[in-house]
Length: 467
Image: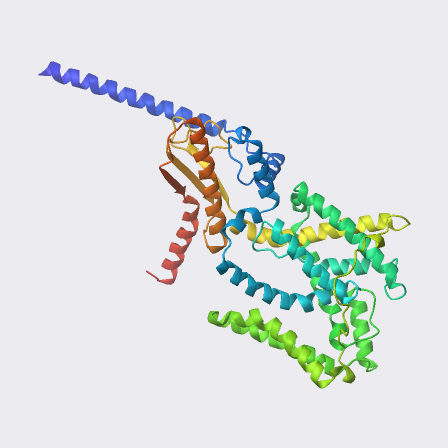
């Protein structure tokens, strides 16, 4: 009996010793992975990866083995996303897009004319800038949240910079040619930014500088609208606050402004603000602020036409040149003393436009395009890491595990997360078919990044006494 107990005790000690050795080995392995973890991808690796993901949206791990035809198709899909979403387009989506297009068009008509006024150009040029960019972006655009068109900051930048060397009122033709040349260079620089994916350059600009610039530009643009609101004919050509306010007070003092024009403009401004307030208070009336700009355009046009308001001091746009403008290539100036100035101004305008876009994109990026990565288990550990950063991570056969690096999944990013997961799952499926492996049987989503806001929600509920 004593011998049997001794043998069992010895066997138990051996098993326990083996378990302890295994645990010790696992701890050593875990410590090795933690202390000697691979370096995170460098900036240029991230840039190159972003470019590859943009150019080859459906690129998988067997891209080198794909046929040339598939590579070309993937390349075209990167530059023309319409080839991706166009296959699933239907009548229901067209109906929604038609309503959204009518709403934006009604808003862009007066808005574009205002931008042309800021740039000291004829109204039809503002309309051209609101028509051509959306048509191109519908084919080449990759974001469903950002609209493309003229920007008030760039319009103001053009006029305030170019009128220093060319007065738009003394020689409007020469001024217009210089604006066309600057715009051409700005387009060239923006195309280069997009082709080489240089948007990250804006990250080197201080956030405080961008916010201050945008806030200052908003104040200047708002003050510039006083010219049209008060119907002031002799307005300051300078853009600083003191000069603009001095011009406004001088006009009011000498009674060279038109109260009827001011009353009409303020009436529709108040109407738009009330429509926006109503839409926020009652979500069922969301269509009121959407259709308010169109109603404003129709009502203001009808009132001015029926009352002959232009005879009583109300400033109107008057006649707009019909049809499309002929090619302006012959008006570009590549010779003369102002070519270098036009190129520098174009570069500044391109950077400012890029900063404006990215300032909106950065707000939406973390929420709309969170990182989605495939993860695998590190050898002899229970740690799961990104397979791109840890190539030795082991993927479980027949199971795909993804981690979503966002603290919240909502309507804004659900579609992107779904498309990204489907793309990675398709890549894995193609890889399995090519290597003769089994099919993927399950997909696991690691949602541990959501625990933080769930915990905060629990704390908040306990604090205010909710169950």
